[in-house]
Length: 123
Length: 108
Image 1 (cartoon, each protein chain N blue to C red):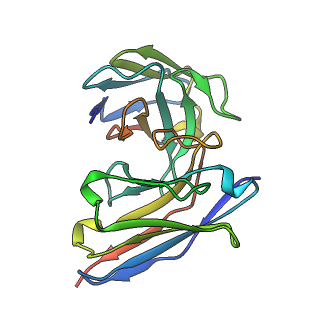
Image 2 (cartoon, helix red, strand yellow):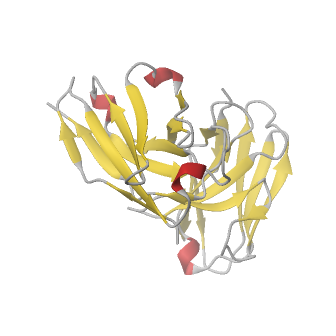
């Protein structure tokens, strides 16, 4: 069965960086893109960006351009999201989520989600 | 980007009742590219519907989706205890994909 297992809670100071991992299993890792979606406390869902695991192509939300990057390691079936120059309004649960079809574009819905990683930014 | 507005913010109903959740888009959603998710407290969202009216794997037929253009509806025909949760719509017809702010279905 498809599983996305994320790394644990992170607490960071403003200006620092965080790198969250998402380990996939149960499907052909390189065939499906992965997006990251975040949810601030008590708020709705916000798309952060997308990585094509197949060819490394990325697409990021305009408001996060320059501060976010996404990579993958096919040897461990893991996708990473790094967010730099953290601010208090980056405090959120970050979810990885899989494209529903192989070799999709970045504008998709999501059929499987990780359990979420809470990133808290506080001085 | 397309802004999705969900209404009502909270729906208070009893088990066995019918729930109708609305999702309105600021501009027409391309083709049938609208999805719905359910989220329970402390859990990740889970896919309910895609393509407006297609149920995801394992979703019971008491859930149905309808609509086109700018107006979409998720209907739960008879609420079961496990259906009380938060629901989000998402459009994926235009970049970037965007989500509504959610409707909470709570027990009356």
